[in-house]
Amino acid sequence: MINEGNIFVFDNNEGVADYAVTEWIEISSQAIVDKGYFSATLSGGKTPVGFYKRLAASKDFLSWDRTHIFFVDERVVPPSHRESNYGLIKERLLSHVKIPDENVHRIQTEGITLEQSARRYEEDIRRFFRNKGDSMPRFDLIMLGIGEDGHTASLFPGKSSLKERTHLAIPVTAEKFPNKRITLTLPVINNARKIMFLVSGRNKARALKEIVEDKKSSLPASHVHPKQGIVYFMIDKPAASLLSGRKMGQ
Image (tube, rainbow, N blue to C red; front, side, top):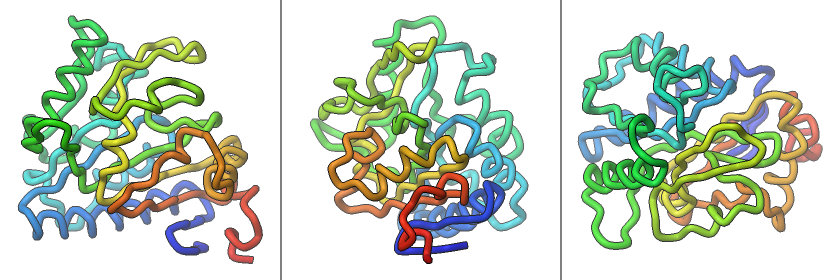
């Protein structure tokens, strides 16, 4: 592992997953000591699958009854669909741990419109955090990925969704992807206590280099700058292959 600041480079995705589990245990334990519960927001995709499997199998003490799971984004498909983020996370993690059903705050996508789905999810978040007016929820941990085009959550390059400052969750359409989506907005993400980017694969290397090293980058993931939180990048060597020698610890 190579570490500079909050950038951690591992030999492979297994190393990324193992370290992410260690961080999860530490962050969740401290949150529960501080206020009695832990709130985490999870992402779909291939990269975090290994992490979810390891977390589900962890023998360390994990207070799942005091853990609340939310979702960074969701495709507008049934929960049983292979593209459902909820379906993936349930299969790899939630169905293997003793978490109460009411502690899983999924994004409802069936039987309602795109706008209704976003509004209901926002209302659920506000109820949980008891937010009023324009105040933003403060998640203990948000886990994100990065796409080849530099998108994170379902916030895509050049889209008006990057400028949303009022809503917590919004509908998203992207010509590049077949399914419409619901996503958390940047103000929510940037209000988190901790943010962990899990990034693997050489196909992410070019976007990651720009996000980490170019202060003028306009890529969506480069907009993640919590004012009172910490961002960690946990990446494998292929994804880190284009980072400067200083970032690679050379």
